[in-house]
Image (cartoon, rainbow over all chains, first blue to last red; front, side, top):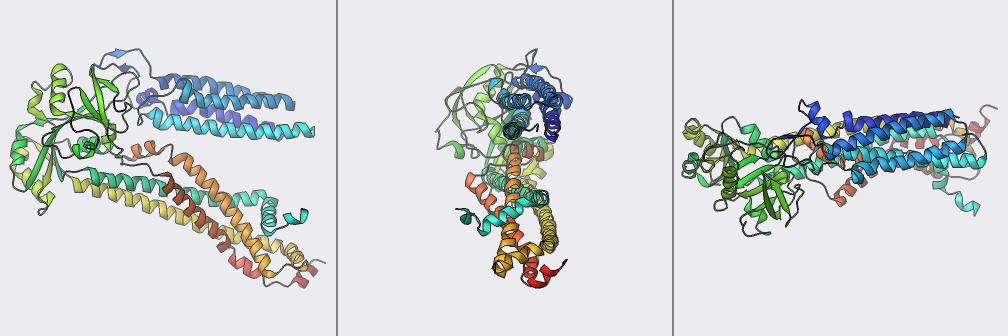
Amino acid sequence: MRNKYISAFLCLGMGILYIAVPHTLLPVCEYAETAMGGHAAIASPMGHSTQSHMACFWTARAELGLGMLIIFGGLLPALSNSIEQRLGITLMFAASSVLGAAIPAVLIGVCPGETMPCRAGTLPALLILSGLFFLFSLLNVLFLNKRRKAGGNG
Amino acid sequence: MADKKFTLHWLALQNVRRKPYRNLGLAALVGIFSAILFGGSILNSQLGKGLESLSDRLGADVLIVPYGHEQIAKAALLRGEPGTYYMRKEALSRIREFPGVTAATPQFFLASLSASCCAERVQIIGFDPDSDFLIRPWIQNKITQLRDGEVVAGSKIRAGAGEEIFFFETTYRVAAKMDATGLGLDTSIFMPLSALYALMRDNPDIVRQIDSPEQYISSVAVKIDPALSPRDVGNAVMRAYAIEYNLDLIVAETIVSETARRLHTLSAAVYWIAAGVWALAFLVISLIFSVTVSERKHELSVYRLLGAQRSWLARLLQWEAFFICAGGALAGILAASCVVFPFSALIFTSLKLPYLGVSGLMAAGHALSVLAIAGVSGPLACLNTVWSVTRFDVYNTLREGE
């Protein structure tokens, strides 16, 4: 029984981190610039303002959605006593962690400059966070599977 | 088959697993010590290599910059923070003729605007190919001369050799890439002064205050006669021309010594904190082992009755201490690796210090050293307990509580 509350608590934490890392803890370029008193509009080569956003901005948006999904998903096991349901949700978390890493690394990406805030801070933080979340999901899957075979309720 | 499992190591591991929370606590303490020591030594090595690169690559003995732009010039040189500054060129010929000056070469520092969406600002450095002694030594094994429309890119510029790079609405071909220096040069683009002046003429909005770019330079890098003190000659140049041409002086030796001082401060802080945590871990392990062995006297007496020698008991306890410490150290090294390697750019950008990555071999060497220190600390910490184990009387211990 304790497992479901621990996993719900951890998922809540992970979901909050997925939202907080690219927005406030290690913000992507545009949020970092805004935090330093700059403005989010991007200057063109000759200094004209344009409406386009950097890739890292969209990565932060996607992680926001993923974080909310993880928080919502994290609450479900706490409401369920079925090991099979919790196992399924935990497998979804493992897949979400892969998505959490793929968004900044492959799917959307971050800015190319090595010293830019999103590449130097946000990207490694999201990759480490996703690695930890994957590890947690994997261990939980193994634990729940063991319980399922033993016929317990975890 | 079952007998084969009852080795000393296996038994020690089982004993460690039997008290998971207490041993996890001890391992966590060793883990914190290992993380601080390993993380700190990696950061120190990265900074040390950056410092080495700094003294190798500065090339000039003194830099003469416009008055009030000393910090901007240092930031551009050390950290690649883009900046644009300039002064009239007349000072150059006077500096070249100054007694004690063996060579002087002009440079122009121009900060690009954001070249395009998602590209960061870069420092464009114009150099004089005829008199240059700073840039050419590091690229001459790659190219002999730059043609029109060609630039040399720092190691952290995304475009590779042969690729094109676009800024100020002009496309340039990257003729060569410099090796990593750990300095601001890594995020800079180098081009001949003539090409930079042409670029400024074609885009007068870049530096609106300049009407005729050829009349301006940003800095003069100066080599001083080795028999003389660079600071003395630099100061003499300042006394002669500082007011007339509005000049400021940067002595290369000072930049290196300032960075070295910060390296030593960081090293001292890291090693003192690590030593403090190590002492705490040593004390706690020693105390916990002393208490638990008192609790385990019956168990240890049974081993003795079954024929175990005192030395065997001593080794059992020492292996337990070793497994706890080695496990903690491994976890600590792993945790520190997750911070220092991926975030080194962020850490050193915040510290405003030059750095260069360390090789895998060097990192492995640091990890093994930390593992060895932590691994040895456990058995050492419980030596006193081990000694007492070899002294208690089996018969009386087993009779206790009857």
